[in-house]
Amino acid sequence: NHVTDSKKTLVIFDIDNTILEADDTHAKDTWFSAMVKEGIQQGLEELQAVKKILPCYYAAHKTTTVQPVEAMGPSVIQTLQQKNISVIALTSRSQPMVDYTLRQLKDLNIDFSLTAPTKEKRSFSLFEPAHFINGILFCGNNNKGAALAALLDTTNYTPEKIIYADDKEKYLTLVDQFAQSKNIEFVGIRYSALDEKVKNFVLDEESKKLLMP
Image 1 (cartoon, rainbow, N blue to C red):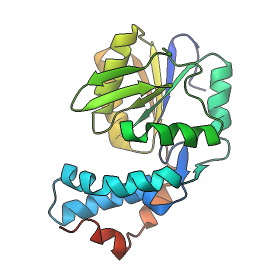
Image 2 (cartoon, rainbow, N blue to C red):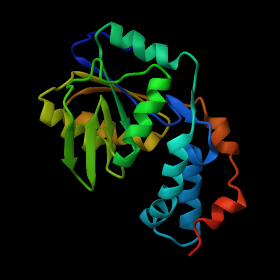
Image 3 (tube, rainbow, N blue to C red):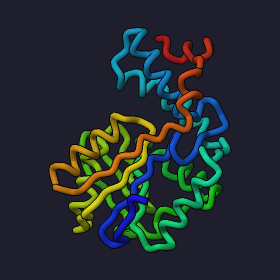
């Protein structure tokens, strides 16, 4: 309903808990977020917790299968692309996750390169390197708004409208701030399909041990 002009609208999707959910618990975004929270409670800095968790998270992604969060999700993306609307993904996954991510999306028949503003690979040095590959902006620990700004600056593409779906409010706020700074109309969609699952998730004791010195 929000898409009006295909050439001037950029539609952006988060990946984890918005498009797909991993089957392996240790590959779930929900597990990762719970582990970071647990690490902070144990006295770690956020980035220290992230670094401790990543090896297990990467290993799980190497083999995990994935499911679409909603069965119709992939077809929504395909329909937008068939209308020649610019569509990309914006994810907190980082460069080591590129191959796993492309495989997982391929399993769901999703190809973000089809109507991306550029087919070229791009890299940016922000808080840490960010990479745009196959229509997917891999942000890592960067501000998602800053990473998107860097991408659009280097592609000479300025949409008049951005529509962004993400399960985390904080990322919608960051992209909204960027859009406001450029006078771009912004529609943020807080994707809530997995809210109950996330709320009821309980971290197992074995996982907690991964955070110990």
